[in-house]
Amino acid sequence: MLTKANELVKKDLGIDLRLLGNREKTLLVDALRDTYPLAELLIRLEFARSSYFYHRSLLSLEDRYADLRQTIVVLFETNRNCYGYRRIHAALAKGGEQVSEKVVRRLMKQEQLVVTNGRRCRHCAGTFGQS
Image (cartoon, rainbow, N blue to C red):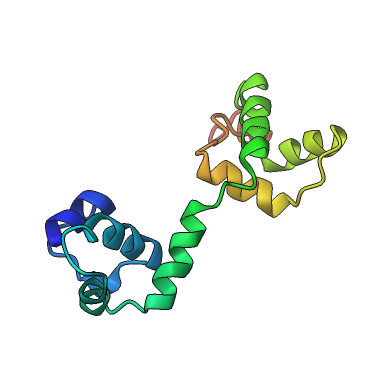
């Protein structure tokens, strides 16, 4: 069971099964359900049956921000990876998309979109440390 957990969750072999998140536990139960009975897996993982079926239904849902993710990635890449979440949000608003800045920030973090070059300080660029 621990080796299967390691394959699915990508954690160490010495992991405590109780410390796994509910989504990770759901994936683990789904993977081992053919081998072991469901009740035994849930008891072993200390995972409520209702929580298992709830998270299983969440996994089957489509991503509600799939189109927005693609739009954000395209905006980010067409602007040479220089747009942060505020400028992306402004560009989306200009295009007619109504979405929260927090959603844009979270989606950019999930897609690992990070601005490559930050702004330079005006006072740091000159003759710093010279007299």
